[in-house]
Image 1 (cartoon, rainbow, N blue to C red):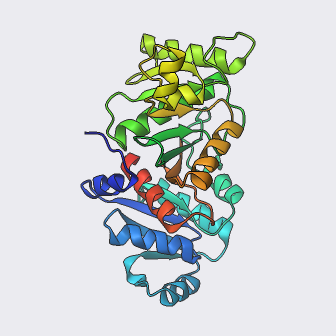
Image 2: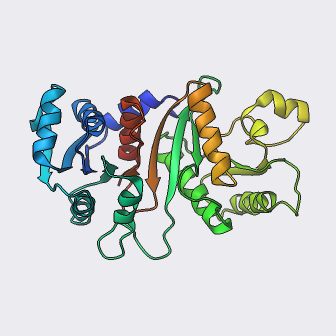
Length: 303
């Protein structure tokens, strides 16, 4: 039975062997509290890489038992990120998480050619978001909203595969329905998003992208609104019931994600995929609940 709520991902992960999370430069209360919640709920075991004195001070101020973590001393943020990647590469961690360091330094550590987490020179990093919004009947797995500004066809194919894998492993959907977005459902050769959507849809039909039902181009209204599908008389297995959404560019994805969270009261979990392990990339402004969902999501897909 497929998972339809973010809280269900947490319960699902609890039934699996615990994954090992490594938090890079985990000197802040936001990161430590989120990781502590995940540890207490049985979602992960955790190692915090950062300044030990600061971590202990934060734990004391927030009534958190410091003994719930393994602490690795490294006061420099760049070295802490590199050390966290080293722990992963040594086979001692299954998930990476961003702490107090900036996103560019976190990503630089992941992308480092000698000590980073890239599986090969042709690997594509992408951001996968799982959104729970009160206006839709199930979770939406979507990308990319944060990393690839203007994905080309090959990158869109990679994004599609990442979304399908997340839906299958984390949400237990055997054959997820994927909507490849454009501004219209019409096949317009002059609009690159339409052309790419047609190719990806045909690849799904021919089995080049496996374990999914794919349709596109579709406007976002057709992807998620069955009434709109009926009014426009569009015949599609995906339209009105999409599990996954592939955005044509980062602006489309970012606006969709922020409108859902800020205007519709949506909750979410998110991670970077394409590296050797899933990497939790949360903003300091994200709620503790969002970070917990992101950790659970990463734990659900980690090998």
